[in-house]
Image (cartoon, rainbow, N blue to C red):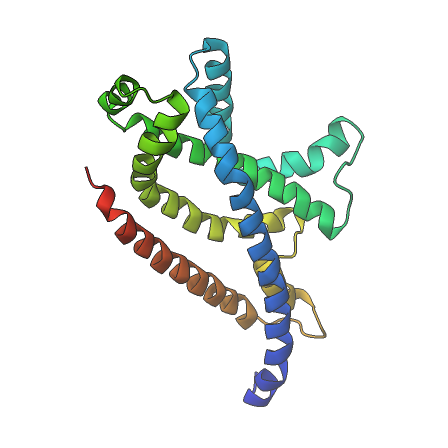
Length: 231
C-alpha cells in the first residue's frame, strides 16, 4: 500500500478503533465496579463457618476458575436461548455487552475472592484477639485492623489480575461484541470501504500497551503509598 493510501485510510481506521476502544474501556470499568465488591462477598462465603455454604461457594469458585472465560461467555450468552428458549440478552450490541459484563464480573469476582481470602487470612489472628480484648466489635476489627492490612497484601496480586483483565476484554469478540480488536479485524474483511488490510490490527496492540502501561504506573504508585503498612 502506498503512503498516500495509508494517509487516506488512517483517519478512518483511527476513528473506528477509538469507538472499539471505548467499548473495551466500558467493559473493563463495569467489570471492576461489579467484581471488586462481589469478590469480597464471595470470599466471606468461602470462609463462612456454615459448612454447606462455604462448600457450595468453594465449588462455584473452583468451576469458574477452572474453565475458560471464553466458554463462560458462550454459555451465558447463548445458553438461555438454547436451553430455555428465551434469548434474554437480545441480539443487539447492548445485549451482547450486558452478557459480556455478567460473564466477566462473575469470572473476575471468583478470582478476586481468592485474593481477598488470602489477604484476610494472612493478617495475624493475634491482632483480632487484641481487638476483642480492647472491646472492639467484629465489624470494627475488620474495618480498622484487618481491612487496611489486607489492602496492603492484595495490591500486587490484584494489580496483576486487573492488568490481565485489560487483555481479556478482547475475548468478548467471541459473541461479536465490537471491542477494539473486533474493530481492527474488521478491516481485514471489509469495513468502511477498506478490506484486506492487516496493519489496523497491529495498531490495536498500541491501545493495550498504553492502557496497561498507565495501570502499571498507577499500581506502582499505590504500592509505594501502602508501604507504611509493612509489618
